[in-house]
Amino acid sequence: MRKLLGAFALILSAAPLWAAPLSDQMPAEALAAMRAADVVFLGELHDNPAHHLIQAEALAAIAPKAVVWEMMTEATAARLTPEAVDSPERLERLTGWADSGWPPLADYMPVFRAARDARQYGALIPREALGQVIAEGVVAAFGAEAGRYGLDQPLPVTEQAAREADQQAAHCGAMPADKLGLMVDIQRLRDAALARAALLALIETGGPVVVITGDGHARRDRGAPLYLLRAAPETRVFALGQAEAGRIDGAFDAVVDSPAVDRPDPCAGFTKP
Image 1 (tube, helix red, strand yellow):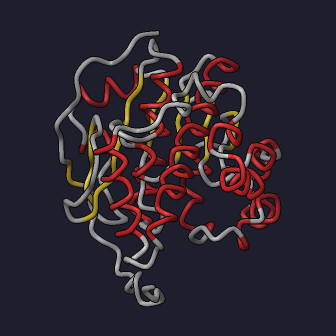
Image 2 (cartoon, one colour):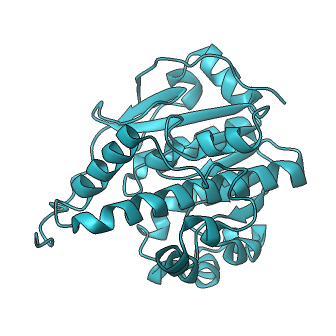
């Protein structure tokens, strides 16, 4: 395995739910690089159905041996079978999706169907592990391989400050300042967990592996690809980001753009301290 060299500086146009095939939207060299990768991170904004259609098309193009889900724990993903995917009702029961806090399962069904025959892996951090971050720190919560993924090293001061500012913005300015470092640690833990699951899937199946996750975890400059390459620098990685109306943060190998979803003000329920 080896790294993919270079990055495609692309903002590609994706239509709404009737989007053209991904091969019509992505230049041939970018599509070839995605197909040649060992691990492909497919970013999303969780509540944008068009993003899930793009992910489904990418899965069809890649035909992965394994799929890693941000939305499910290891135990939940292990219960998935092709037959369960064929029945949305059974899939919802097996995953507990209705109580998970993720957008409706119907939005994700194109992705599940496209991933039907792959081996399924989950990377969602269980609630008790998040509690361990508070009590003992991110290294203890991750476990023995924390150093391999770089979790035992503090972030550079400027990056830590930038990440804390991003967390404050994401929480609408309502997060107490002394909790921002914890939020950054939890984000790093989730990134490393995705990377660990992707590497395990690659080792066990031979790849290719696709990771279904949010844009924040898919970005190469901060997210799970960075942690994966720390642990296994020879891995060929491709990261696809999905923008809304041309807006996206982070570095990706390619970006596709979809119309923005009409959503309520995310800050309406926050009360600043």
